[in-house]
Amino acid sequence: MNLMANTIRLEPGTTKNDEGREVTMTLAVRTLLAQWKEPDDYVFTRQDGKAVRDFRRTWAKVRQAAKVPGLLFHDLRRTAARNLRRARVAEGVIMKMGGWKTRSVFERYAIVSQTDIRDAMAKLEAGQKREQAKAAAMEKIRCVASFRPWLEFGQSRAKTAQF
Image 1 (cartoon, rainbow, N blue to C red):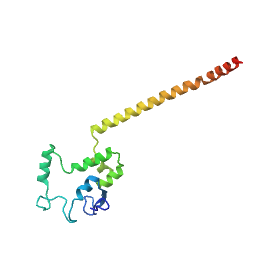
Image 2: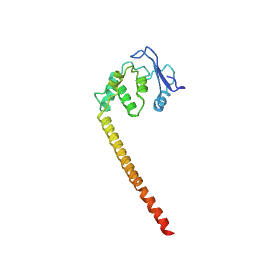
Image 3: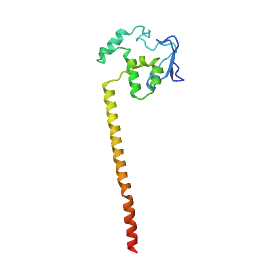
C-alpha cells in the first residue's frame, strides 16, 4: 500500500494468476487505511492487535448480522465487477483490476442480473421513442418544404397586387 500515491499493489506471484496489479484507492479506503500506525501493521487485527489469519468465523458472524447467510467472501469480487460494469467502466479496465486474463473468465464474474436486462430494455424503448420523435419532426419539415413554393408564389402575388 502506498498512501502517498493512493494505490494498493499486489506483487507478481501473490495473486491467483501470478500477475501483479495496482489499483487506486477510493477515498473511503484511503481514509480507513490511513489510520495505520506502523507500516508493518496488519489490515485485519483482533482487539489485542494480533493478526487475523483465518477470518471464517468472523465472516460467518458478519453474514448473519447482515442477513446474507449464503454470501461468500469471494462474491464481493463478483459484485465489484458487476458494479464497475454498471458504472460504464471499460471492460478491459475491469478485467485488469480484477486480474482476469480471458474474456470467458471475466464473463463468469461480471454477472448480468434481471435488473440489468430490465434497464437495457428501458434504454432501448427510450431510444426508439427518440427515433420516432425525430422521424415525426423530419416529416413536418418535409411537409413545410413541399409547401414552400406555394407560399413563395402567394407572397409574390400579394406583392404584385399591392402595386
